[in-house]
View (cartoon, rainbow, N blue to C red):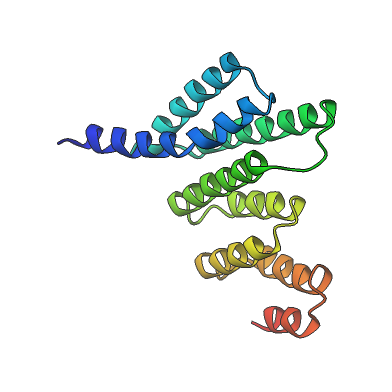
Length: 172
């Protein structure tokens, strides 16, 4: 088995994990069958792009933009249909976005802008537990990044009201 077969297996595994979420979106009437098919085709194309050995940062960013746009579309349609509560599809999309960010950050460890974009996304979604892990990973990989340290300290102080943790971060 060659490298391509292994990549195809990984892509198939990721694509199969999306099936329940997409069936739920269709069952709730948030997307038509043709829209789901188009989304699956685009996701599969992006999965192959990001699994390539020479995947670029832009491949990941375009994939992230697709998912963020899909999340916004579902939010609009949910509002239009009078569905106020978020459901499993919303959480699955957010989890997928974090998964893509995580893979991008693993691939491009030293890219401070990418880490900051992930932090921005997590802050907008108020994902505090996730933010704690992101800051931990980012600071471990980029220990000399002053903006990252100050932002982590500001988050500890402002969002979590933890002055002693913020002080410790600034003193490092």
